[in-house]
Length: 507
Image 1 (cartoon, helix red, strand yellow):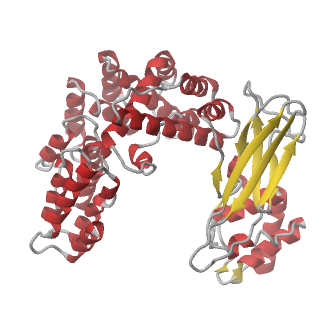
Image 2 (tube, helix red, strand yellow):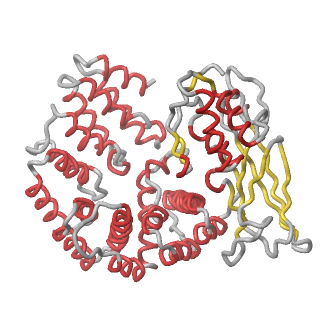
Image 3 (tube, rainbow, N blue to C red):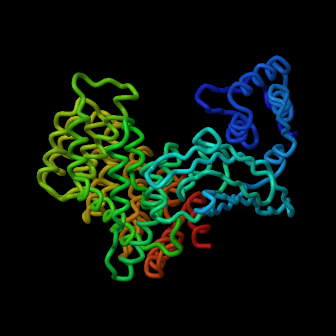
């Protein structure tokens, strides 16, 4: 291979995590471990260091050590190193009730690149589980997870003695870094979110389910139609909230995908409809699971002094998520709850989480918390940056006016890059308000870039990158964005740094 690798690379085998400088990175080494098992991988590492310690070696040498330890033939697997691109795996399942047989058909393909017109099938380890109608994991060959070796363009794998039609859980433990296409329905994804024993696949199912529901309902709202949320998504979220003993995982599983992430999946972005759809799903979950969220919030309170450990961090993460969901209900009682947490918190995580909730809710509590937070921390520069950013990220209607006012606040300094990033770049990432239909968000940021350019053209150029995606929006917003960029490009004395970013955006 062309790229040498020193054997002193860091490998943390016990956690199934590998950090290397291989040309295709940790994922390929992880697949090797998946294919041969942890014990053989450990033995292969011993052989690798014994043979090559202190030498500059190649990927072939590393794989040869693994082959010597396991007897596994890696000939086809080496395609991962020699072939560019990410394979796409297309899967489909068919259940024969009479024969109690489930057949999973997998096909692989890798798109040609400019220097590679023909591609070859590689060896792809696909770890599969089958989740039954009641959430049970079916036995497939003496275990609940079976490792399939996909080595041909298309292969069918049969699973016998399957008593009911399952939902497949594919690529468990992230067994291969591929693009997976499987026609999961909303019900399938809700089922996996509720029951899958693989944490990553469970989280992934939830993100896909939440995302496609939000996007579908954003399109409905853009057409003037009412949003509809299936009961299955509520039931799955309830199962996650009630059925787990890992607060950190529950918090991740119930966190909705962000608006900027979802916008990338839209052909034409309507940021207002997208915001309302995401907020609508959050409120639907909060309304249906109010008692569960309130109960979890109370039960996760920590007795005693703050401890910076992973268990406590997970409990705080979930407790603060519950607080956020409860404050989607526009209740004075829950705003008061957030203010009490803000006032009594003995750590920044809880205090700032409560502040973020209040900054996104109307009412006197939000203003009081913001004023108090600044009074407490005005001499801590990094904490003040958080204070600026939480206001710039707010979804409240007055956010732009608030950000404009903050540019004249003693806490903000246009000459300080950290303050610029905290306030102005955060506002540029505020999907709802930067891309407001009236164009005021575009005009405001363009003015700020023009003012910043003579002071720090490099930071101004980074701030101008907030306009990079303006062509994904509707014609009216595009018109406003184009006008703001044209005005910026025509600014007298504009630096080369900013001009290049703006000119490329307009091109």
